[in-house]
Each structure stands twice: as structure tokens, then as C-alpha cells.
Image 1: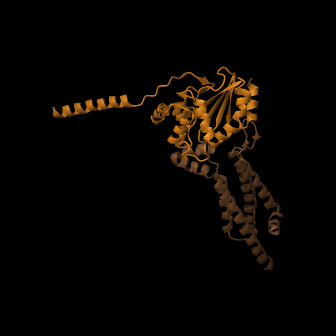
Image 2: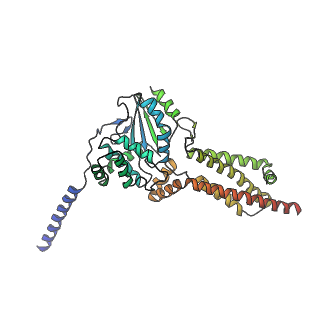
Image 3: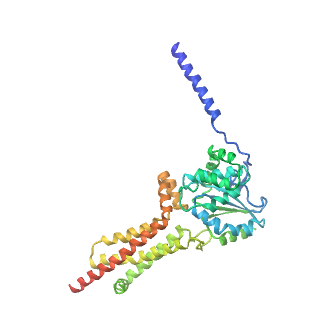
Length: 219
Length: 161
């Protein structure tokens, strides 16, 4: 009888612990269009669309905030794409995180979505690529610095800190990185130019002329 | 110094080897470091801010193409020891590996295969790319001068005997 009672007690305690653990685990709920795809790629968990959402071409960029080639592309090629294609409504851009380079990479990606909660995704994204330092995991993208970038953008720091410290968007980053792997991205930056009829892959921080040639052939 | 260098490279075999080493190292390193792209189109470019990296790659390729054939000449023609050969090989390898593993396919493959150890190694090679390449150039320059010196001595001995 005592044995049965002990087993029953253990079962009841286990169930209570299980329920408590489930209830206390941070839930990740996002207000997202989970059906959003561009070509073969699910961009549902990626960035907001930069530019005209109805543009005939979408550039899907897979990137890591600690990648120096992404920095090169951001500073050398992207400004011309912005000027000739995004600002003219011919194309739009979606950034999808492929955070694999160091321990600070996923945290930096999470921070961009914490900024997105306050409507400043692209401002935060730009401040990361403007402030990137050449060394991986050197501390330039640690939690304190990520919070400092948010402070400089006048974000609500209580909301931002809570979001970042709770790792609210960790699964979103994992999902995005898996999308990169599933679509055959083998390094950053990696791009897909998705046109009305087909999509083309570009690997690496290629010059503007390559993007221009592909996009002009699609319009 | 020029006479000694000429002595090696007037032999077509060593001149040809030198050209092969230079062109293959240059092309491979430029592809890995994203100065040359083969897909979707063949394109070359030197992005702003990466000029010094391009210069270091050129210097490593040129020095390797100079030093490796000279050491092979010593070993084959003068039956010398292989000791100095290691300097040129080490210099070439250090120069090639530095910066090869960054955010491109090589770095991704290393991180995917070796996990956190690979990530640490990749971060080290990326963070210290420029100093490592400068060290490699220094090793190759030292090897070049010691090779010249030993060629002068060994050739005199050979001519005398």
C-alpha cells in the first residue's frame, strides 16, 4: 500500500512539475504572415519588406551581422541597388538571418526584431552594419552594445531590454538559419533574386553589375 | 642576388613552375577572398576598403612563386638539404589559410563540420587575417634571402669541386 502511495505521489508531483515548467516557459508568438514566401523561400520570419511590397522583383538576402563580406556588400553594392531598384519601385528587399559565425551573431539578429517591435527594424539593421567591427565575437555585438545601439535610436529601453534578455526571437533566428540551409546557402551574404517567372541565386558579396544584369533580364 | 635568381630561372622548368605557382595561388586566393566570382557570371572586382588585402594576396603569391622553385632547385641540382624548403611551404600555407575561412563557403564548411571548435578556428583566422598574412610574407622574405645566401655558397663550392 505504501509502495503504491509513493508511486502515485511521484506521478502526481511529476505531472505538477511538468505543468509548471510548461506554463513558465517563454512562449514565442509572433504577429506574422506565415504564408509569406518569395520563390521557393519562406521569408515569413524574415525582415519587413524594404521598398514597394508590390515590386516585381524581390531580393532575398541571407546575412550574418558579424560577416565582413556582408559589411562590404552593405557599403559597396547595396547603396546602388537602393538608388536604382528599391527607391524606384522596381524591386524590394527582404533580409533573412543566417547567424552562424559566432556566439554574438544570433543575439544581434534577435536585437533587430526587438527593434522591429518598435517599428525600427531597418534603422537598427543599418546601425549594426555601420558599426560592425572587423573581429568576430570581439564584443562589438554583445548585449550591452546591442542595447546601446537601441538607445541611440531612441527605442523604449525597457521594452527592448526585456525582449533581448528573454531571447524572445531565438526560435525565429533558428527558423531563418534553417531556411538558408534548406535553400542551399553556403555562406554569407547569399542572395536570391526572385522575379515574376524565375529566381536566381548569387553567392557572396558580388558587385552591382551582377545584380543589375540579373534584374534587368527579369523585368 | 639577381645573378643567383637568374641562375635558377634561366632554367625553363623552374620558370614554368614559378608561373604555375603564382597563377594558381593568385586565382584560388582571389576566389576564396571574393575578389573573383565565377557564378552566375565571371566577374572581378576590388571593393573599396579591401585594396590592402588584395596587395597581401599578390605579395604572398609572388613570393611563393619565387621561393618554392629556388628551394626545389637547391634540392634537385645541388642535392642540398630540404631544411629551407619548409620555410617557403610554411609561409605559403599560413598566407593561404589566413582569411580563407571567413563567412564564405570554406568558413561555413569548417563550422558545419567541426562545430564550436571550427567556429573558434574560423574566428581566429578571420580576426587575424592581416597580421597572419604579414607574418607569412615575412617568413617568405627571410626564406628568400637565406636561400640566396646558401645558393651563393653552395654554387661556389660546386663550381670549385
